[in-house]
Image (tube, rainbow, N blue to C red):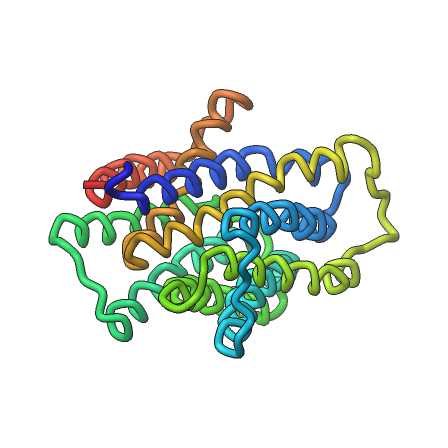
Length: 286
């Protein structure tokens, strides 16, 4: 791990996001909307950003290029999340999630063509298997009914592009910026978009403001924030063509936790994705 810090940070991100995925629906099912969950997540980014600045001895990159990179990374990530909420409101999750989940394809393409990244044959096999695994892991059985329009598909494609570009710029910016500065700007942009999340919230519905609402959401969302901070370090030390698909395999952890905690047995397609993902992780970690 000391010789390959990218692997350590990639594992931290994958595990934290995987556990986060297993518990994130609890506040939502208890009556705390996902849009307000976003707002709580943005606030949990603040202590993580402070911790990052402490690590960098309070040194913040604030030149024009750093601010631009930070804004692109932050708005692409947080903005994509809000757009995803809208896509899921209008369209079927069984199509939206597979489209969005393949965002590492954009990162890999840009990193290979623009950053000239390359790796071993075994790693490439792992990357290809990871993309297949990601697609299968995001499978949701089709539900009845069909959407009235296809604006949701355009929104899903937009998130697909935004998150793919975000990961690429995160790797690119690590060449000239401190990782802690990158995360600081991610936090700032996430907080800036909180009013948008409030605007998207239907306050006419009953909202749970008790422990299972914002408080439990904060305890869960901080896992997401820590994972995001670790992701920045993973991109600093590792290649984007490996880190992006590897961290996108977080649903593997989510499935395992859901199986043991909730007794939810995954769909056969998901099981196939789980098996392929395990092989992919082995190939990419070598």
